[in-house]
Length: 96
Image 1 (tube, rainbow, N blue to C red):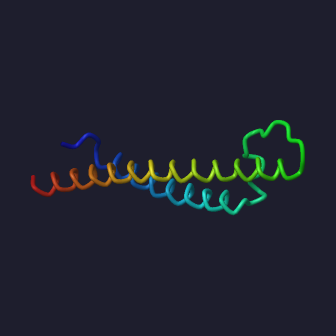
Image 2: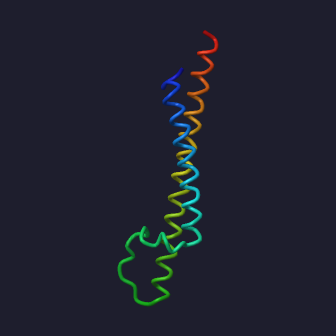
Image 3: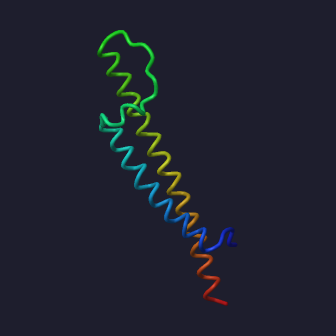
């Protein structure tokens, strides 16, 4: 049963593909602790030593990387649903 039309399912495919690529790359850059993304690390509050600051920053980078990868997996699910809808719409238009 088709839930959305062919144009919406194609749009979902394209946006999902871009989301997967972007979030996967952002996750990699967070994982390697790219300095350009340091502003996006959650506030670390107070720290008592330089090693404490480094450990909190590393934890923030790793948490953001995992969050990006989880979001990329959600986009993968959206892509699969959009692909299924696109297939259903094309199959039904061919049999008519």
